Structures are given as C-alpha cells and as structure tokens.
Image (cartoon, rainbow, N blue to C red; front, side, top):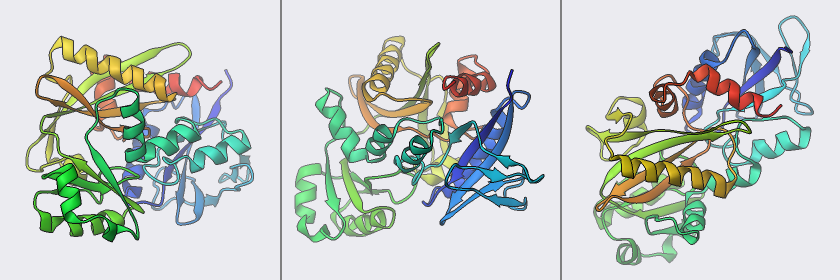
Length: 333
C-alpha cells in the first residue's frame, strides 16, 4: 500500500482561527499514523506555511509554494501532499476560495465543492434556498454593509419580532452574534455583526430544543450519525463561550423519540444529497412545539477536537474515528 501524505489545512483569517488550530490538532490525533504521513499547513494573514513538527507555536516552518501547494520538509525534500483535509472555520477554507484553488491545481480535498461551500457559508442564502425546497427555517432579513440606515428598527421588529438573533450572514455563529431582546439593542448588535462580515442577518427567535446531526457519505458507505442535544446551562444561545468554555451540556444521543430521531436523520441525509455535499457535515436544528423540525444552519467544516460534536457522535454510533477519517480520505482515490 502506498503511504499517502496528508496535509491538514488550518488557521484562516477570521476570529475562528484558534478554533481551527485546535481542530487540526484533533484531526492529527485521529488519523492513522501507520497509513499516512501527516503535516499541518497554516494559512493566515497572507502566509502559507507547513509546520514541521507537532508544536504549531514553536516548530520550524516552511513556506508553501502556491503553484502546486508543495514545500520543503526538514530534510530538504520537496513534499506535495496527496490530499488536503480542510479544517479552516471561516475564510478562506469554508467559503469556497480554497476549494477553487485546489480544483485549479488538481488537489483532492475533504470538503464540499466550491459552489456548495460558497452557498452554505452564507446562512441567509442557504436558508432561503432550502426554504424554496420545502424546508422549515426561521424568517429572516438581510442588512448590507453601508445600508444599515435603509432599514429602521421599526421595520425589523414588525417583520421579525423580538427577541431575535442578529448575526453575520456569512461565517459561523461563534462570534458577532447577539440575542436581541429590546429595540435599543438592535443597532449595537448590527455593528457587532458587521465587525465579522459585510452583511448582517436578522433572524426570528424560535423557542425549542436545539439539536445537531452529523453525516458523511462515500462511494461505499452512507452514515447519518446519532443526534446531539444542546442544553444551555448559563448562556442563552450557542456562542463561543457555550461551545468552548463549558457553558452548555451536550447529550448524545439526544432525548428525542424514535420517530423524531428518524425524521431528523432522514432530513439530514436529504439535505446532504440536495446540496451535493462531500465529506463530513453537521446540520443544526431547532425542534419547536409539536415536534416541528426547523433548520438553523449547515456546517461544512465542523469542529474536530476530541470533545466536538462529530467525534462525540462517531463514538455514540460505535464507530472508530480513525476508520471514519480513513473512509473519507480514501473516497477520493
């Protein structure tokens, strides 16, 4: 068996840079070391660098040649990865830019295509596209940078209501998201969201149970993973503090009936196919009164630390995360 070289591409240019670096360390720990030679490549602030050691902060680095994504290892050998596992949460790894570059140079990668990445990176576009295909999503409106004054507080409240969520339209929900309860909180929330992106999405609040479901498919297997229930302990919504500082309780499998579980998993599989996804994705939902399933957002590069949702769900399914990673990588060959 040929030993493949895998590059874990991490970092990025958004507030989620450090989270991406943690996911890269998680993925490195999950991969089959007997099967693959592994490097981490950090993309950040215009620098593309291969990390030539386990310690990202202190290891020597080599500049990546952008003509073919190759670099010199510590022994002076030129290395061109056989495959790139993208774990950048945000630009340029979650919005299609890196995927387009890899398509141009013929580099296999782990995520969805350029089109799917670009679409799912913008929550407003994705939700309204899937609404047109019959999915239930919260009502929302878009405010573009430089045009904030064209939509009044009264317009927002009459259309969306209070409380509501104000968030960057593109990117994740860890940063720049505010749960707005009163009219005077709207403008500060919009300005905060604009610090993370050019467009702002104002979304109606839906009371209910928040859940998330992972899925991946290859030419040989189709796996919809067990569902995780997200229970807030001190925070009001699933922000950075809730995700990474323990302000939330995560229950896998979720406390749902068999019937609701089956419907969520079927819907997750359907959305995966409708969009033409590739690799591991995670879809977040809210279950509202009457066991109504509402789509929140689609994560095409979900967190992959040891305690992230996907590794939790893989364990709950009785699978080995090393085997899962191997299935995804080998699907490209």
